[in-house]
Image (cartoon, rainbow, N blue to C red; front, side, top):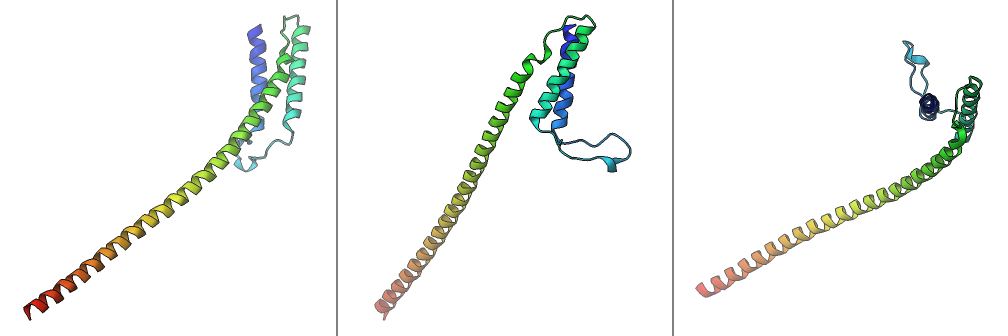
Length: 148
C-alpha cells in the first residue's frame, strides 16, 4: 500500500513538474493549436496546489480504510529545497556569466599579444634586410675602392 501512495505522489509531482517547463506541442494532428506558453501560476501557488492535492489523496485513502503515511509532511521541505536549488542555479548562472566575460577578455588579450608578436617578427625581418643591404653596399664600396 505504501508503494501505491508513493507512486501516486510521485506521479502527481511529476505531472506538476512538467507544467513548470515549456509547454510541449499536443500529440494531435492539428499542430497549429500547440502553444509554448509558460504557466501563469507562480511556483509557490503550484506547491500549495500540490500540498492540497496530497491532503485530498490522504483523506481519500483514510476514508477507504487504507493505512496512510502523511504524504504532505515533506512537501514544505521539498519546496524549501527547490528554493535553495533555484538560488544555487542563479548563483552558478551569474558565475558562468562572469567566467564567460573573463574568457572573452582573455581571448582579446591573446589576439592582441599574437598580433604584437607577428608585428615584432616582421619588424625584425625588415631590420635584418636593411642591415644586410647596408652591409652589401658597404662591402661593395670597399671592394670598388680597393680595386680602383
